[in-house]
Length: 472
View 1 (tube, rainbow, N blue to C red):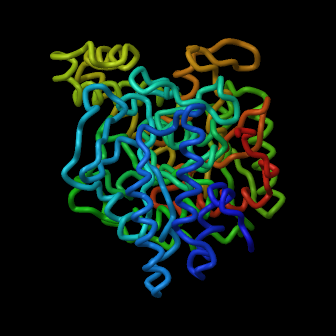
View 2 (view 1 turned 120 degrees about the horizontal axis):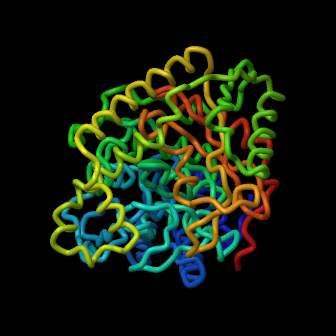
View 3 (view 1 turned 45 degrees about the vertical axis):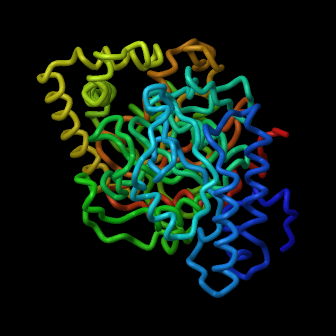
């Protein structure tokens, strides 16, 4: 297989890794290709907060020497990757997309960064995000709006919008995002990439700035499902430094991705996950489910009654926890927050202890209702987003021609998975009006292999038909 140097940035990890292992391509060539692409698209897309050209090339040269001397470490060895700028890297600035932390330098690596370094990843930069990961548009008042490579007038989704946009524009081969109310899955859907929010406690959050302690996750954002499985394989595992980490054995996620979905039982919840969905989105998702049925899967409708209260419970939980984290700065320097998130932090001061505790009771019931559903089905499938990405700067989206609130609709199908901590995967399922649509696959706790395999079986049907953004 011959790949031109300038085309290396457009490849996936699963395409590049075998060639790297054999020495047929060089980590230096891939890294140069990615850095060139990142710099070429930065003015248009604005996905990066910082690009590490000099450091990245040194790391790539080191990886090349290791691989050529027979010290190949695995699938991600020599792969260039930029990550969300809320994840600490020792001696590097981590801005959190904020003014307050614009000069913050960590004296240690996040656990996920340490694991990626051990795997031989080449870090090429830090990616933009909605300020403090608290928003869905990635329209950042301090670092500028990130633009969707499929249509630069549109949002890329957030809060990990830089990661989604960089992947879609080939400015990184893979990435890590964070997800508190959909911040991995939202930009993955909006940008036509793969995003995995794994089970709560499956991946360490040590060294990742929090948004809401009981809702936060760190997870893979990639070009393909196998890439996501390989990345999860590296970062998963118990970490005593993270008090929320759960000591459960790490599965063979890459091995689980076989594409065999014969007799897989797909749950469909009509009352919540298919209510109030744009017709173009709904058609693509239902077609996607049918493609798995064509491969031997079965469909069964499931009821999850407490979903009707999930929006409220997620809102109370996230507002309260986020405002507690930022309370001191909100009191002493409110003017240094962007106006949108300052309002959210102020709103988060309003819920009472009774409100918060009632929200946790809803959360408990929601977990029980999902468990009952998973006693009958293997996975649950739904749209990732009920609407298409809106225009940058607008606070509304269109739902079947009607204007609807952006935030309320974009996070509508996201919150239940954060409240329950259940794993959820977003995979591209086609284009509507020229914009990507994501299909969400939700699974039981610690069954990431199952949802990755279902996503891979669907990915093999080529739902995007090889189409990519026409960005130059």
